[in-house]
View 1 (cartoon, rainbow, N blue to C red):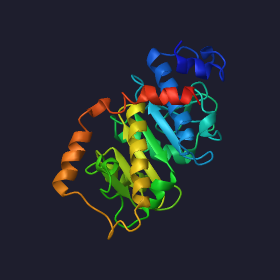
View 2: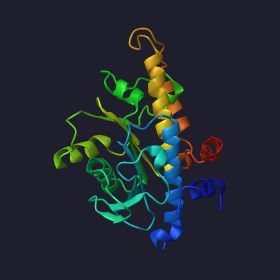
View 3: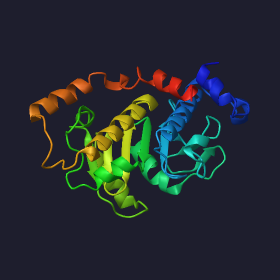
View 4: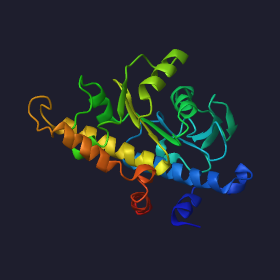
Length: 255
């Protein structure tokens, strides 16, 4: 048993309560629950709202999401709910948030590379999403998204089918999206990459908010430097976030 699995065993009954699990699903459950706990330590939660979801390898159109009503710091590998892209609970005790399906189900259905989808109401991202120019290349962190960030206009609480299609169209093939006046969304090819990208995006937004007048009182690197830095920061490809993950696990274990 790994240290992180032992950490969660304190809070859980036996894995047998979920029936027969594949090795891949057990690993995703541990990683996703770890991700929720880390997000709680980052103060990224919003009460019982917002979600992080993860697809299960070799189980098409199925993903794991938090049980609606739990805080991020209450999520464990065993209380994650398995749902399909229509939001129907397949395994676990519901309920699951219908609004969560509208975003997460749509992204998982449209983006098969999106193995993990983060949607947060983190304050820094909301603040930057409400600025007319959005995220600016004011920091190295922001340059990771120089060619990899989309925007979606605010249209109310619930996403209709038309708005789901619009959101997917705006997201395109990009890894990150700011929902104007609402929050942030990140897609990763793994839980580890998604966490790394959200951490980087949140920091980029926080840095921008510390600049007194970003439009008139800031130094901007040349466009070719921004493009060069973006390419350099993407060199790891799908391995992005993997080397950092054990350090974040240790941070959680030592808290």
